[in-house]
Length: 303
Image 1 (cartoon, rainbow, N blue to C red):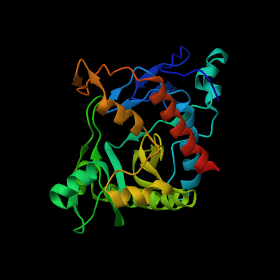
Image 2 (cartoon, rainbow, N blue to C red):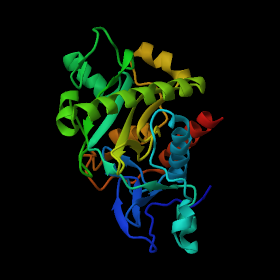
Image 3 (cartoon, rainbow, N blue to C red):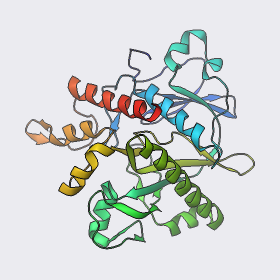
Image 4 (cartoon, helix red, strand yellow):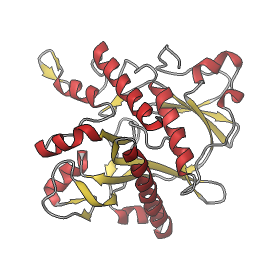
């Protein structure tokens, strides 16, 4: 594991396609992409100035763990080629253990969100409408309630710096057609159920998650980007869940909640941060606690 944090990769041997909140994507010919997971952290859709050391390695190893487990449900974008094979020797340390060499797909502009528990924006929406993304739910649910069955609550992919926007299933049908919409929904729920069962055996609850899909040249649905990492999923350790649920509070989680909580509480010249860039400087203890949470999630999962 590399000790130095990588905020932004700088590869000269490949053309840069795009930098996302976390990943830097480089073109490898016209049919493959090298995805490099940096140690950047975004919160409230703003990228923090301070990286979380080792985070990109942990995210990549966790995604690879899950891609390996889910291949029987849906193909994924991994090519099986070593990422190190497409960069210069001098650049290998930048990408080692934090990269995936993947097929270049036609991305589907829908975030495939699956919720097994009521949390976050879903809980907010339920309180107002007793439904989430147009899916009606039974009355009397609380914050962090398990849902009777996992539900598919898609979102429209937003541009960098914008918030993804929850949409209805009907809007997915309008975007991609009825057949593909149904396939995305059914595959997403099947992946979630399998992953939730595996995580539960390791003492973790996956409350919700989001998947991204693309189409290969033959038109097949392929799972892409990252999968089931603490950046794209809400992981709760089982130990703290019951007490939090009884108290009506958010269960402790394996993600950037430390950072979010600190950002919500911090005052700059007496005022709350307005959640626009630049972000306040993160203190060292918040960085270390967040890094430890990501590490613990991977260790529990792969133990």
